[in-house]
Amino acid sequence: MDGQKGGLLLVMAHPDDESMGSGGLVLRHTRAGIPTYLICATYGEAGWTGKPAGAKKEDLPEIRAKELEEAAAALAIDGVELWDYPDGGVSAADHPQISQRITEQIVKLRPRAVVGWGPDGGYGHPDHIWIGACADAAIVALDEAERPALYHLAVDQPLAEFYREAMRLGASNGGLALQPQDSVDIVIELNADEVMMKLRAIDCHQSQLEDWRIAIRSHQRLMQQGYGREPYITVSSKAASLTGGGLLGEFG
Ligand SMILES: [Zn+2]
Image (cartoon, rainbow, N blue to C red; front, side, top):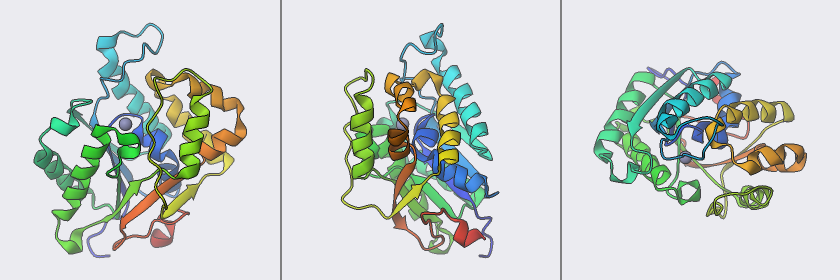
């Protein structure tokens, strides 16, 4: 398409969303040589869990920025924009400004598709909900001919069951209020190699690894059910077609 550089842009809220939420999708594309970019709205400085051992709470922003850099390298992401909106405070941030900045990145990078959080925020996280809304608005602000396709991360029934089951394996802070969709449009199914590569990226986020994320490693079926499947909703597919195989059909 004229003026289209192609590629994928992820718009996320926290360091680790990209790996835990969309690591498989990213790998599918980067491994095929498709340029893939990430906007991360916060440093995730509110996610203090006492890890990694020896870390100090005041160092968390720096620790998480480093973890994101490592995870992005593990996923072969081409460029990361790490913004410093307050973790836990995206709902009260300047949304028109955020949308404007996302629009600027879209204009600069010319992605064929944008992937972001939907109105459920995955598990209702307000930062997810608001950064998702800002990404949607950023796309709407473009002329129709310039708009990339838009997809939202989704939770379906098997993924919700995975979280319920997996979180029983280790202490977790109350669990996630997952809101499975009645139906999703796309499920990316990862093979065992891809699951391992995704796990390597997730493991970069040492400060965020709950006990259950360690415990599930000896449960092959759970790993495949949870890390090996990524559901997405198609919001607008005008310019690209994200399929179970990724965007490859459109790029090949
Ligand atoms: Zn998040």
